[in-house]
Image (cartoon, rainbow, N blue to C red; front, side):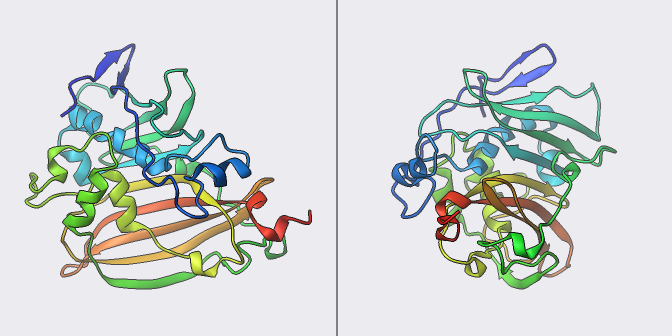
Amino acid sequence: MSDDITIKDGYMYGGWRAPVNIWQGAPGSIHTDDVAQKIGMRGGTIPGTIHLNLFPPLLIKLFGQRWFEKGSMSIYYTYATLDREEVRAVLELPPEGAENVQLRASVETPQGQTVAKGTVDIGEPEEVSYIRKIPLESSPPEELRILANMKPGTELPPQENMVFTQEQLNRALETITDPIDWYKGSSPWGSSILNPSSMYGALMVDVRGNRVGTSVGFFGATELRNVNGPIKADTPYRKTGRIVCVGASPKTEFIWMDSELYEKDSGKLVADMRHMNRLMKASSPLYQKD
């Protein structure tokens, strides 16, 4: 467990971490320097979901194991960091004894740049999460090019036997800065549990085959919610998902997706996710003539 957590002026701060961009060199990826620089980025970027792994040490310090059973994080990515650039997690402190509470959450750089912002929940607070407050407004189909084939409300084929293996989890632990013991073979729930970026991997729904042409994408926002958690390694789940919004901004097209994991035997909802991907217009041949 992290021993460099500090508290000041009503906030809890994690220690500084320097995530490594192991995705550098991936063809056509925003994590690769030359690809990212061609579309106006400083260089190959760290995936936003990697920053989610900064929060569990703080959440465990505040709430113990309960966050993995009935807790959520709802995070909007605002600034892309590069290989080994330092970041830390920041959480608002809860009222003493609070069992159902929402807290402000962010990731920041030493220079004070906000990398991500949102909320974390424990239990069932009355407040709506950061991402659920965002209005989902789809664009008319004629305004879309890259995502022209994506339709809001489309139910995706369920995956009847989704298993995130310990081997996959071990590979993920090589990329994160806070690999707590519960991810490594045993936990209060028996087997290993998934860290947040692996939770994203387990809940991810793949709609890339429906895009038109080539484009460079990046993560815009992620909400992970443990309903009857945690998600365990080497455990089969039923996964469902759907497209909930498809739209466009001046520089991107974007898609919001919801997904869920259910216990195979009982049908009980274990966890769910709302996630947004963005596709850079400048990276697509469909916009080159504009």
